[in-house]
Amino acid sequence: GSEMCIRDSPVTVAIVGVAILGALAVGGNGVTIGIPETEQFRVKPEAVTGIEVLAKAFPAGTSAPARVVANNDQAEDVVTAALTLDVVASAEVVNFNDSQSQIDVVLDAEGGSDEAFAAIGELREAVQGVPGASALVGGDDATRLAVKQAYERDQLLVIPLILLLVFIVLVLLLKAILAPVLLLASVVLSFFSAIGAAWLLFENVFGMSGLDFSVFLYSFLFLVALGVDYNIFLVSRAREEAAAMAGSVKQPTKPAMIKALGATGGVITSAGILLAAVFAVLGVLPLIALFQVGIIVGIGVLIDTLLVRTVVVPATAFIAGDAFWWPRKKMTAGKFA
Image: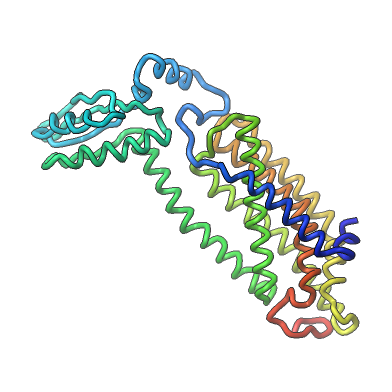
């Protein structure tokens, strides 16, 4: 079925496949990274219920105040500086030693929210502006903000490194440039399609306000690794078949891809469905980060298995023909020249 469609109408198949992936990816336009502390669990525990009850009668940040450390002589000035901020509900010195004081600052912002992170930034600017205080801001929200910033830095470093490593491996394996570029593009598009599809589910079915900090990076790592595995499985087989046909067939890439698809399609589909089911098991866990990673990777593996690897990649190879292996100029029987 799919082999016949790809052979007869590769351009149409490729356009439809990419359009489906693009439509799913658009669903992730509104995705936000970071969730409040009250949404860290899929099933609400008693501690979260307690925080919500407390927030109804007191400022939202009462359960986890920001903790400021400053020199004793300037402690009261730091308190005054903190109280100039609208988002600060209260500030007081709660402890001190011979040289430094601890000041608890209650913010009128839900813990772990964007408002709380913005408030930490404003608070730091205000208290660090007190001359001679050497003020430092800590506490739960400050820690979460540091984690958020660390993940943002890591993503900017790790994601390009992953893509570069995968590209190098594909180039060395296939001894080509165009094929690795197309395969890498399919993997990235598959990932964003999975994020978009999962976000529509999280937002509209589960009522979630965002993804946990770790979810984007871990999902990318898993889906790129798995997608490249299937790419290698399919395309390396097509390369072998094309080499075997070279000399007897004028343009061996097209029949080779059809043959490789027929030989590996069942195995890839079975493995993908099994793997998606395994990751979907994470969806029963109470921790929201693991729940989200499991759902995203499960959806991504199904998209990769049923659409990208069995439809889009073969159709792309069929359109490119022998140019798929560029910069190779020719093929001789049994090997690539």
